[in-house]
Image 1: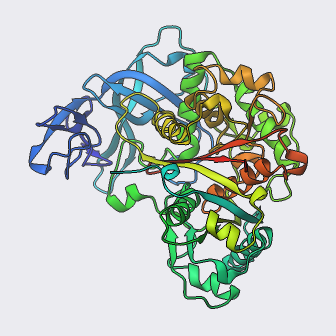
Image 2: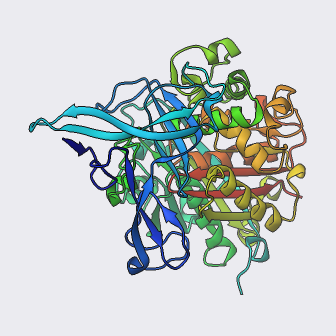
Length: 142
Length: 382
């Protein structure tokens, strides 16, 4: 079975990644990562913040291929993305494959990426964005 | 009722000093800082005992580091306060020193920036805030994302970003306090290693060690202590803002635009009146973004104006004449105070090889992760 690399951020049981967002009852703004202490826009307290599922799909706002990385969790090069979610917030995550800046503006949606297998034989996964509608996008690194 | 700095009593920079920015080494921070303070005291013609309060901009070295440094100048018992505001720590220390003098709390104050690189702990880590990128987006990738979006929006090229580093390396080559003092060709700047997106190593600032000091004083103190009023650089305004929520708009540029507008309005000048600007060019793309955010070029227009030489020393407005963060370096705490040192030198006509002819008005700009922005506008003595 699938287990989440970061259980606080997404639900691994869905076939397609769904993100754990939050929404402010007072001003209606949606957040990801979720806010739990107070609203960043209007200052409403924790009781006014509600957990909401967010589809991990939207429009590619920008991307960058990282060639130098100090952490041991992932080997460079890899490509990161800024995605304007259909459900509201502009978020950052990883792409499943490299792309050029021509892909900016494309439709993207997340799929599960298997990072490793844990001691119980589960697949440890995280969402990574994949271009759905490539338009004129090329396949090189940006 | 709230007031601007210019509506309080006049405050001027009367002395500046630096310890050269350099690769991290064995020199203790105390020696770095005292070197800069002594240089600033000598520049002003002041004794340490004349300084009534000290603000130390520092972010990466140690807790409560001020007195262990200032004790080498003699005991005076003055208030000493560390100011941590990420990359804008030095700028914020300078603002506090100016406020103390302008408000009448003291006659003479010093802002010192000092740091040695150590382990950084991000506030997001301390707060337990996680996101999908999970620590894989460090500052150079944050700016690589902005650079790629800028290329997409404006058709800019990697060569146009690299030209910022070529200009600032040329300026830094004339600055004995710069960490990088070597001129670079476009080919050298574009050469590997590639770091992130279009950014190569020479398009990212070096993080080193160093110190910078700026002494500010009231008009009464300038007269009483016999300082040279012709070398006093007036601080016209001090603006500080923090990030709000900008949705898809680039927050570094939006915050810079807001803060610069306040600083220019408080100073009573327009952006096109500026002669010299020191800005937070930690990565090449930032210089283009901030030039546009400050109103000096239309959106997407800074790269071509830079290529025309408009931001060179001797051009329309000299941007990063010190070499900026890209060439002078970014030791964190000192950087914002070092900008004041450069602008003071320019407005006094004492910048030597780097002198921008006829410099009368200058602006210093820093952003700090977290995210904050500080802008000061300074004027040559009348």
